[in-house]
Amino acid sequence: SGTTMLPGTQTVFVKTQGCAHNVSDGEYMAGLLAAHGYKITEEWSENVDVFLFNSCTVKGPSQDSFLNMVAKAKTTGAAVVVAGCVPQGQPGRDELDGLSIIGVQQIHRVVEVVEE
Image (cartoon, rainbow, N blue to C red; front, side, top):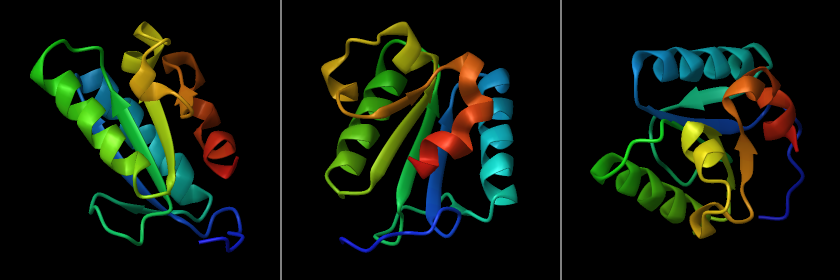
């Protein structure tokens, strides 16, 4: 849209898939973002400024649905951030080209990454 967003005023769509550990990572990242004033939503809409997908390396349908969501989010023009071990386990994936990636060890940096 060309408008400059102030850090912390954006709406962040957070979607977590995977094991209990991954869910707690997702909640932790959402909590950090909320503490910095971001509006967290689980509702996909055109008002989303940043998509944050957090996923495990699961083979098969769940990984396909994860990559499909990432592909769909990329078409919106919003920023897309991918966290968890899917991006970490397969860093060379074409689907993840040009995205911000947060590894499992870096989830505490989520605010910094979203602000970029």
